[in-house]
Image 1 (spheres, rainbow, N blue to C red):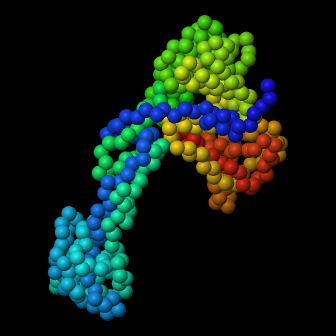
Image 2 (image 1 turned 180 degrees about the horizontal axis):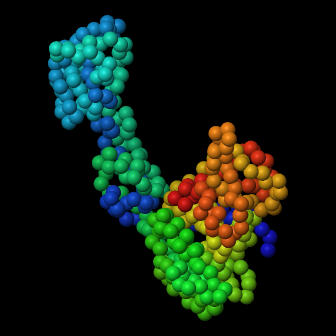
Image 3 (image 1 turned 135 degrees about the horizontal axis):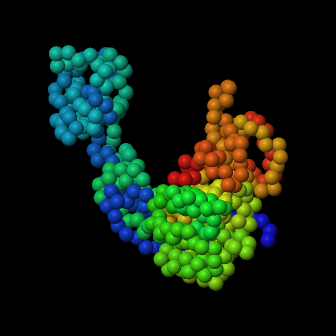
Length: 403
């Protein structure tokens, strides 16, 4: 089976994503992390009235060239109050957010005036319209403030609240079934038998799915038998929108996932030209989508964040948001090219010249979780490329990839 490129694998996954057309309406406090199902328009202008951007003095200057000048302070306007009109040559004490009174054509910060005996002295140049926030300057009524497909977080919820919207239409939570294969797997907290290893994939992928806002159904460890694998996948397919397995997608005698998926639905088994993470399975189990991740823990993690996560976001109806890479100098040399695209575990450190450079962990094996825990990003190395120290490299922050 020939290798396909990383970009082709991602394109195939995204092409196979079928966003859920259903929606539900939730109060703002319950909508964090959800995907917006429809555009949201502002019912009001923001600001809803002309107001002051500063604590200071509202002015009505007939002649801006006549500064320096001294003006009488004729009123005081706090936020939530409405002032009286200002005549030419008058000033009003005003506070941030308070409506500007009719006739006001500028606001001067309080630290720029000389206040004494109910008057203020203006000593600096005053510009017409300065420190005034005009109605609709931020948001115009009827304009789209949140676009369908947006992932809702604190800024988006605050924006909706700022225009008076109390609830939002969102996509349902994506139900994802997670299972791990391998008789060698042992749960943390349990003594290891000879030849056993602790199951880290369950906790990494479960946490990553939780950060996506998925409703996770964890089916635990599945025994390495055809019957157990078939039963577990069948049950998960009935109860979830997407089923994800860790391990068992190769073609070895004890890898039963491929045969089970083909019996229950259909399967594409890909060998991807990426390192680590070459094997990946994608298909359908009845109405559920299926993704089979490799078993080595670093491979599992990286294929999830780089390939499965974008698919799940598309499946949730989220607008595409490709990972934004940083261009940083390499704090290492890589004189040998690899035929596959590599994602090297690295972190940013400061060199002797004070620059942020990408340093590699000494161990880049697909089972070395300590390197992944140490790293704060990945260096994306194109297939066939070599790297010299100081050369700009493409750096993907892990914080962005895990959400």
